[in-house]
Amino acid sequence: MSDGDTLRLRDGRRVRLLQIDAPELHGDCFGKAALTALRRLTPAGTRVTLVADRRLDRSDSYGRLLRYVFVGGRNVNVELVRRGAASPYFFRGRRGRHAIDLLRAAREARGARRGYWGACPRADLDPAAGSITGRA
Image: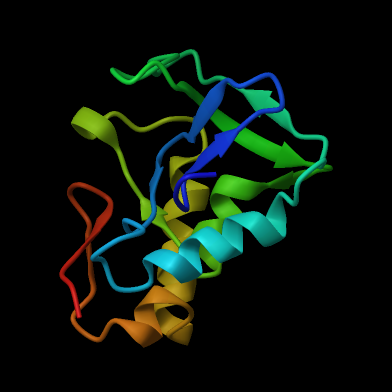
């Protein structure tokens, strides 16, 4: 893992968690905590299920796979947002099949001041983009 929204698989492939954005590891408020949250949800050796969204791109410009990540029946992308470790992110405004769940989880986390929302007082959810703006 290099940050709170990217996994490295055992075979070396990198997976960017689809439709979310976590604070950057260096320089952003809550960046290290976001990485910790991802590590707790997907510890080394955890079996994950990767699910593409046919409405969206399958890889990004860095060659990373763009996928929803599941551990058991839990959507890790949504869970990171629910914990306040990431926000919804809709590249070019395109919303995938879990967009509603992601936005609900963000509103829930913000309302409870979980994670980023409690640690970074100037954070705001941009409803048009579906992403967090602002820094502490």
